Amino acid sequence: MPENTDLLVGMSAEAEIMLPQLESKQVWLPTSAIRQHPDGGASVFAINSNKASRVLVNIVRQQGDAVLVANATEGQLYAISGVSRLYNEAAVTVTNRSEIND
Image (tube, rainbow, N blue to C red; front, side, top):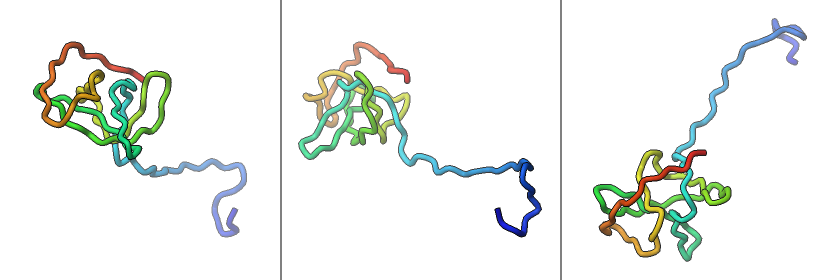
């Protein structure tokens, strides 16, 4: 402890620590939603107005049949099957909405 302080051993203090926020959002998705790329990258397909839109993501971790990905938006609808056949602006039909809760 520094010599020039008003604090004494045994006293309590209050501190506020500012932690950096994550720049990208992290979302749990089923492993079936992930499309692996030959270069090691990964993507998912967001669904808006019955059209697919590819989103590049970073895999943070995998736990069972779920994957935590960065750069995805919570609450967004994602394709969880047939992703190997999807491409940008591909027409899709939403047949079932499901969520994975952490």
